[in-house]
Image (cartoon, rainbow over all chains, first blue to last red):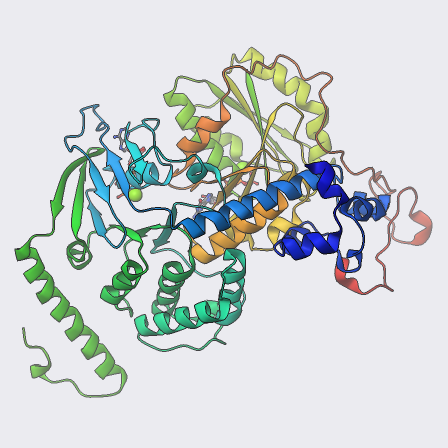
Length: 339
Length: 235
Ligand SMILES: Nc1nc2c(ncn2[C@@H]2O[C@H](COP(=O)(O)OP(=O)(O)OP(=O)(O)O)[C@@H](O)[C@H]2O)c(=O)[nH]1
Ligand SMILES: Nc1ncnc2c1ncn2[C@@H]1O[C@H](COP(=O)(O)OP(=O)(O)OP(=O)(O)O)[C@@H](O)[C@H]1O
Ligand SMILES: [Mg+2]
Ligand SMILES: [Mg+2]
């Protein structure tokens, strides 16, 4: 096949695979005036000097282009398939090699599962098992199934098809871009079909979650803690291709956590949250209790807990109302809290 | 003995990743040793020592650390054999981001970090492009969006590589990485006759040879000038 790609006109290649633009750009190859050249002719037209300067190995480029085309097409294909309809965890062992006692745990999209347990108990290990689609080949001996079957190795090795997206406490934006440019860049790398529409949805959702509204022109590094968190969650829910979202606590400050989880779930994600916060733990449909490296219990959130959650939710709303009253300069009254 | 060549820009997390991976090897009963190459200074040997990992360091001083690597790697392998290592890892300095110290037939691993910015993949030459495995670190402190954009760009530069995400602090992903690195079949005895995957720059100018004076008449050999005419898109 390398033979045939070499003989293709650059213009044709670019038309058929528009995403090659990024390949050329990232490899510092300028192809503007090469439309009528074949790939072979184009590569041969590079001067020896340019090749050494840019540290290129032109013999390998056609092959690399094919790899790249294959990867991107695979990525686009998987996105079409809507591929993950269930994730199943089969038991392994605790740190003392005692078998875990559950039979199997099957998670489906739009379901929220929380993970609780002491420090060092193995919460992160469980998340890593999922990310790696473990096949009894990690220290826990657990096995992960996708759609009730042994998973395709693509989940381990293909770089654009990560099974898992992560959101955590310590994450910050580091790019020096405005919110809109930032989202455009992400949409482009995800090859979003309708970038405009997608960006508008993310902006709306993020502003819905954040206490204070922000505009498309705000630099991402200038967003407040709450606004950044809101944008990250909305962006992950709507634009990330990963079907599973792992959350490592979402702090209280300035975002509506209930809406945040509902947003993720409405986008058909499987959501796992490692948390110590009773509100988040009870927001989940079930929780996994980890002890000494093993899954010790799996508890569905029971009806009594749901009642408790209502109360916690009232408390959360009360606090948010107080916060917004304070912000708008009102004096607070004793009757503002009615618990 | 297995040989692994780990390379990457300064402070990208090479040592952290090697330490975490070596811990996974240790659990499998595989003895790992490290040789750290750097230019002027490194404390990495102390970190390895603390974990009970046999370590040697080589400072290139006034020489390019990658050229220094190439001229010393044979002796490095001999040292590893003498230590009876199952796995010998070299950690490079990766100073100018251009060269790759990878050898044909020896796994080459490039460690880069999310914090270095999304234009980094484009800036790193053969060190990234010719690696077999690319390890991306510090994903715990940037947003999911930036991780995805960064990964997509790494893939565009090196579509053939396996890309792994490892958290150098918590070690998440290091166990998984270790399973890709050790090859029971490989037994490296000597490197004589093996080749660098990518030639190092042929440049040799008077400043490489110790010239300190500025000015046209002191510039001999392979001298290159900034092009002041052209639009500066290449610079
Ligand atoms: N947050 C975070 N920090 C990391 C991660 N990996 C490494 N670090 C930190 O980054 C710093 C540099 O890591 P090193 O492992 O020393 O990097 P290196 O590439 O070996 O550095 P040199 O050998 O000096 O070039 C250290 O402070 C590490 O703790 C990571 O995944 N996340
Ligand atoms: N079943 C197991 N068998 C062997 N080792 C295990 C098992 N589960 C976890 N471990 C190991 O125990 C250590 C601690 O686990 P982990 O980091 O997952 O804890 P954690 O619950 O995430 O802790 P923290 O709350 O501090 O984040 C890790 O080195 C992990 O690989
Ligand atoms: Mg943890
Ligand atoms: Mg180091």
